[in-house]
Length: 170
Length: 171
Image (cartoon, rainbow over all chains, first blue to last red):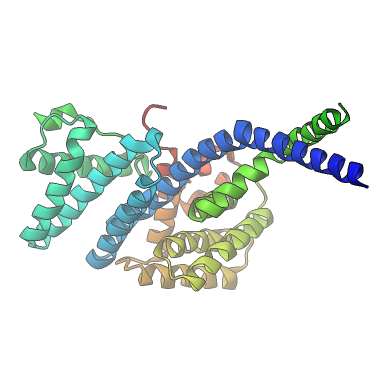
């Protein structure tokens, strides 16, 4: 009886060791790569929603969409997904600049300044040469006209991409 | 010696079980730690199927209804503007599919539903033509007037939201 119990224990120990080794070897790396892909999808779902709301909704709801997007990015940033770091920085900078523009149009100077400061914090990480308020204000203005132009020309919602637009920085 | 053999057999069984279930384990860990990511992924899968136009109208209708139901559950239990937004787009698309199926009352109902949801989201223009133009832009589909011609188009990247095609830096 004791022998059987020992053998069963050995078998169970073996199963646990074998299973654990496979999980560490395959499942954990798979989990990490799935997390990156799903985070990318998550970001894109929020990006589309935010962009369309920014264009179509009234001021209050557009602002809700932009701030929701910032929160979503923050949640993902907390996951420390290095592969998406540059995209997080870009999306955050862009959203801050859109919020800056909205606040400027609404005449809320203090709020606008605050969003501009937030955008300026992200800008150097993206390698944007000139991070002065004036340059970033020109950058978002140029980007938004380009987005409208792209929509008119192609009939499509423009893709998000990292805007290095050097001409805007000069 | 016998114990070593039994242990070896156990390890082999463990490796076999682990190998077969490695994907399930990865998804399970993800679902426990980041359920919102899995939910976004499910939405993406549903959306890709729902806005795939390379199928019959009945099939498109079924996919859109299923996708809409998935989203509706989300924003009914936890008021969520993102789910509401995608639900409204799906309803608008469903209205064009119903039009294609010559079910005008259903088309009107779905469009009214889309208008109601988009009004809640603060849209300033909820005219059907405008909503359908936005749906067409987001999913890169032709305007509804050419819907019938579109129904034979390829179902691939074409039906993905434009922003979803954005490339992560470094890729």
